[in-house]
Image (cartoon, rainbow, N blue to C red; front, side):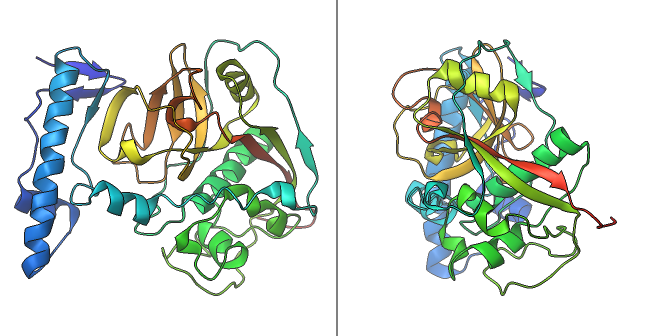
Length: 320
C-alpha cells in the first residue's frame, strides 16, 4: 500500500530501508573497531523504531512517517547533546541596545499561512541552531519587508555574537542587540564552518536590523497562528522526538523542555509548519509539520517561549 503526504510517499515500512554498510556509504560515515560495532547496534535499534513507526503510519494508526538519516547511529542522548542546544536564559529582555516592540496578538487567525522564506540550511555537527534561527528570522524578513533575497552568514553570528563555545548553544534573540545597526555579512563572503572562529569582516549585504518584535510566552494556539498571519516567527521547541521524522503531521509531546531554535513559517487547520536547520534531506524538504494543540506548552513546546522576528531595513549608501 502507498500513502502520499505533501508530495512525499512511503511505499512500505521496510522498502528503502538501508542496511548498516549501505547507510554508512550514503551518509559518508566511517567508524573503526569497537565504535563501529557500537554504532551498528544503535543503528539497528533506531532502524527498528523507524520500521515500527512506518507500520503505524501505513495502518492509519499515526499521521507521520520516519526515515533513516544522518542521525540514525546516534542515541537520543547523543543527538540532543550534539544538535539541541537552545539556552533559554540568554534572553533579549536583559538587553537594552535595540528597540523592542512587545506585542499581543488578538486578531482572529485568517485560516492558513505559508510564508516565503530563505532556503533550508544545515548546521552540521555543531549546536548552533540558535544562529540559524536568528539568521532565518533576518532572511525571511528581508524577503517580506524589502522584497530582497539576501543570504546572510550564520558564522558571523557565531563568531561575533556568541561565546567562545558558540557550538555549545545559545539563543537567537540574544544576537540581535549585538548586530543592531551593524553590517550583516553575506554567507558567501563569511561561510559557515560549524566550529567557533574569530570575528572578522565580510561583504556587507546592505541590510540592517533596526528593531525587534516579540510576543512573550506562553501563547495560546490561536494567538500563535495570529502571529504567523503577521510574519514567520522564530521560536524554541523540544525537538528530541524529531530525530527520524520524514513526513506527515507529527502529534508531538506538549512538554516545556525546550532545546532547539527554529522558525515557524506557516500553519493550516491542524498543523504548524516549521523550518529546521538539518538540511533539506531531513523531513519535508527540511520542514516539519506538527499537529496544533493548546494542551501543555503546545506541540513540541512551541507555545512556551513566545515568538519573535526582527525589523529589517536597507542601509544607506551601501551598494550590493
